Length: 111
Length: 112
Image 1 (cartoon, rainbow over the protein chains, first blue to last red):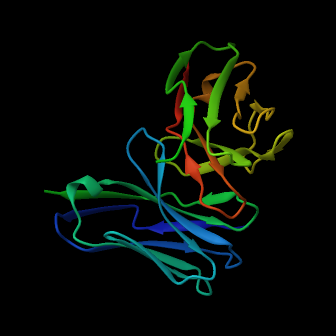
Image 2: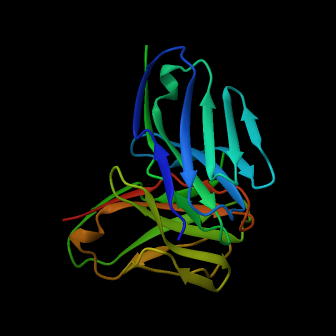
């Protein structure tokens, strides 16, 4: 059974710092991995989708990497801003679009 | 910006009431999903659909039911709400099973 773990559970950094969020999964037979952002009480906003054949994807200050064989993905946020404060979720897709989510990392960027 | 909408955003109802949570998408996606999320916890899949007249139960057991009569519409119904149903319900859609998933804003349900 696929399990997804995100470390750390919470992270607080000063504005301007670069940071890395980690995601690990137990079953490497995935089709893709998706990173989301969730603001309090809101839905999920898709940030990046990495297909299993890809190593990384970039969007603005965000860079996501995927090492399928070791069951790991990282989300790198450059030059963090207070507006980046949110919960970041990773989800793996290994069976017909049924996403398996981690518990998320709650990020706080202090001005 | 994803075109997937959920109504209502917030709902407080009494025990025993029947409710329907609405989810609509205008992207023509075949696949739609319902997830349940308790505060501070991960999302769990409770229902999914691969197209019209197709519905399946997800990994987390739920007393709710769904229907998919039209491609763009995937409502979730609770016949008799209970306090244990208090949670946030999130709807999602994707073009294919391995495509990017888009989520609605969620419905926060409170049963008193």
